[in-house]
Length: 170
Image (cartoon, rainbow, N blue to C red; front, side):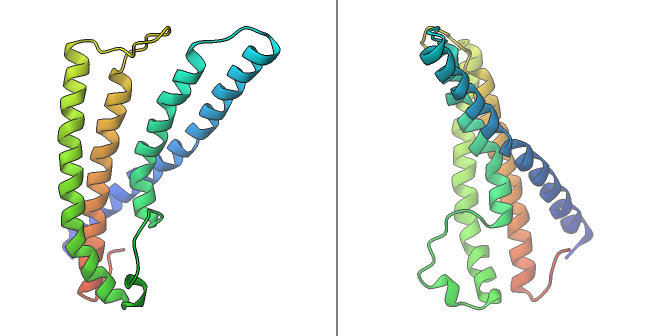
């Protein structure tokens, strides 16, 4: 594989790993927020309106930012009725073919997320609730996470292409 492809794979995998591992810790923020909500509402009898919504905003950040890392590790869901029976080379060939469908889907998702972000910025979109938080940060995270998944998908495409040719990208 050309050196630029090797460098691309190396750097995208590095960024996906760092952001994915950082995103893993968002679960603790979500748990802490919900625990605070339970304690203040049930023990102190002081309901906090923002805690559940903060947890609801943390959840998409958790799975969107962790998506590329999950793809990199191969921990995503795969329908494999016959896939497990194939050789590694044939699995790579199938993955090269199906990666085009994945990229098409992710590009459509990116187009929609950018449109949604533009709307949120233009109209200062807020969640209609007592806390009334801005939707812009969540939508920025959504766009960033989808871009990261597209970059990781291309990285995986290059790895599978090399594997299908009997080569490896280190």
